[in-house]
Image 1 (cartoon, rainbow, N blue to C red):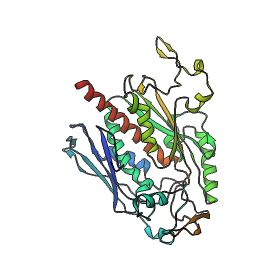
Image 2: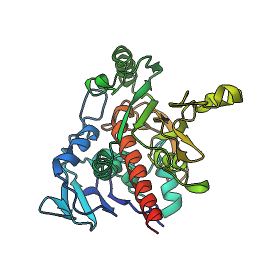
Image 3: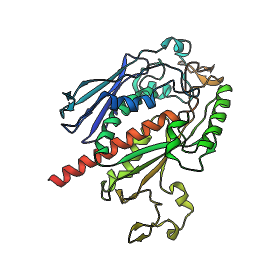
Image 4: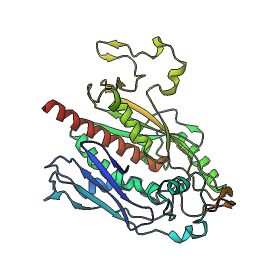
Length: 352
């Protein structure tokens, strides 16, 4: 496996580079006969695309999706869906001056060590632009999950040191951080803007809540539902950690505090985050991912060049001051892909 595909029965393969001709995805294992429009996919892509606010990259990509196969007369055929987004606003010349240097925080060095060659235009295959294909594929999975009455919603829970203290889903799409707390969002934006003006960037935390999953979804041992959600999230370039339910607080809890006791109407708490033994327990599935600060900053930093000589570098160009708001739809997309894959695996098991 070359690491460009994800999923077993419902499977995606993404392709393309940041400054190449296009990016996109092939979706295999699609249910036939499902009504699917480009507008449904475009809606999710518009949430991820650049140029949404002053704290995201000003790169102006329309991210217009073209569905080239797998659709006939408005319905899926069950054959592979190929969705492509042509790049239109790429500026590889912005990287010419630093193409022989390794940018701190980027995959330049590791890609060169693995392949012996690297695409210095932006981050090539390691660019966050690769996630456009994931979001397109996730939009298809979301359509199938909607038929199961399942909702997947993520939001920025923390950014630039500011934490949300309330949860209001109605405000998530009404502020540039996609935060769930309107007041916290204002302070987040202020701090991120200040860091941007200092040629720096901000990290944060994104939380995802999944409702409507009945108990019994998931696999034992190696393919646990939470393990595969973790795999999905950690495959996103900017994500450096994940926790479910009570998360890392469990290290300080006693068993009597952490155990989710049960009553006649279900579990009394949700410290497990909706998954026990790798299988859903019917409660809301809740997890949080740690998002690193954007590596591309114009601040002067130390590095080495291709010959191993010490150099100083500024990563000029058009970059997000905080990745959190644009990673929200990516987190949702990957969660949708995991869930739909598990539903199809469950159906295959029950059919045998």
